[in-house]
Image (cartoon, rainbow, N blue to C red; front, top):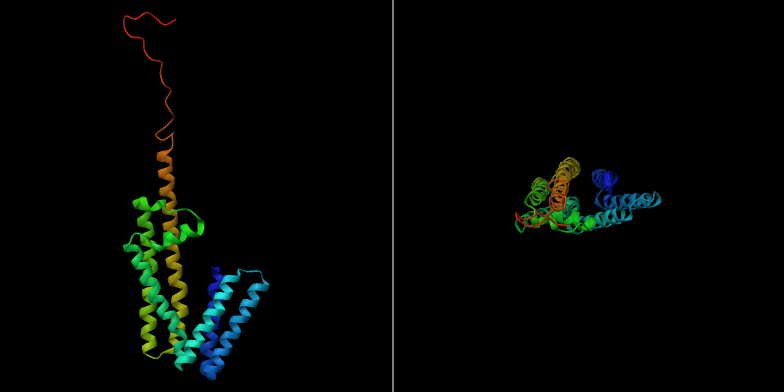
Length: 218
């Protein structure tokens, strides 16, 4: 999904937009942000890095710039991210209540592992906790950035967008890795318990005993 470099690249157009907007005006800021996003995409293609994050980055900056242009205010550049955080947080929260935690669903879909983990309480609980962590991340982003948006603090909006992105995402990823490993351990334990050799070495069937009073077998 872009990795560490993807996170770093995503911050550059935001910084360029805010800096150029403060020095010049919104129109040059919009074109500067789009230009930087395109340049980053070309660099990723030349370096043979994943193409999908590059395309998504350009589209994201273009949509944010269009919203800023339509609203006539530089802070409109951050509206998409604010409301996306709300939608993501709501989706993650709902997935917990319906017992299909999105972290588990996404991991299973990406790796073709299936959804047998839903039958095991400990694995399901781990994915619930990881999904809740992402819910908290998205909720925090929405609350803080929406407050800054209403307060008309464009510069602080950019700072919050970047500063809240890396640390909170890192924490959520740590919880996600823990949940994935927990589910893997549960799967291994279940597989071991259901294997033919569970409980030790297979026992050798003893020779049937001869009934008392019967003639010995020949």
